Length: 208
Length: 115
Image 1 (tube, rainbow over the protein chains, first blue to last red):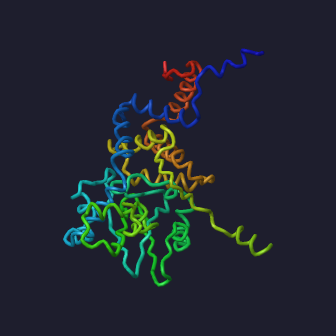
Image 2: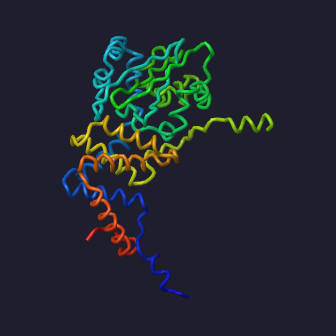
Image 3: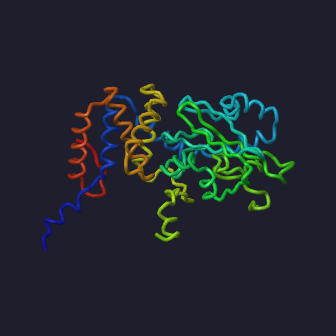
């Protein structure tokens, strides 16, 4: 048995991406541009603290409080910041409201601009090439792949996010939720319903 | 070509919809993400500059596989930083070799560190 040939297996191996990452990170740390602890804190924040529950709280407040809805329509960035959610990239937020006539769908055709403060980081499909192109070219087909089948009479409006301006869909409040607390309302607001590729959970389908 | 075959051939690329809610598939993806956020917060570039760089890298990429997203993200970061002379191409290539050598001399299971 050629024992020497097994030699490599006893040593570590880094894959190409790992090496590229370590290369850039170690240079930036050395030059004082980044601090490794700060990097860990950012990851922790986005993995655990920021997510679609933030957006759901905004939607539930808008459904419950007309004065808040009004502020959200006029200046979404400030109204969202009232609830403690603000962007780190200086982006502006805009609310797009679903009605009986219009359904809104959000995409970023350029890359993957996404309203991080209210939805966290985007799901895989949002960043994919098929979604980025087809949301614009055939939004109705895309929606049906997500299981959303709208009446032919409903218009679909597609909003292309940018680094400066990001959209949050305000879904229609489902019937049968009259008198619900904000907390209970927030529980039926799904991430996809705030991107436009889904609808809120119907009260009858909600698992108690 | 039968009607069915035609339908398959014409069908648009599928959306990678899944219930898998993993944000980062590997530690390096999370670190690439957080480096861009940290450098933006430190004022090294505006977020729209980074978004445009990323958009250009994505547009140039022919693989277009969605799992490649953070690979392209890291490339955009490398490009913006070399263009702004924060790091040079030579520094990157030298440091890469050092990491490769560090990995090669580190016994399996031990942390890999530069000398």
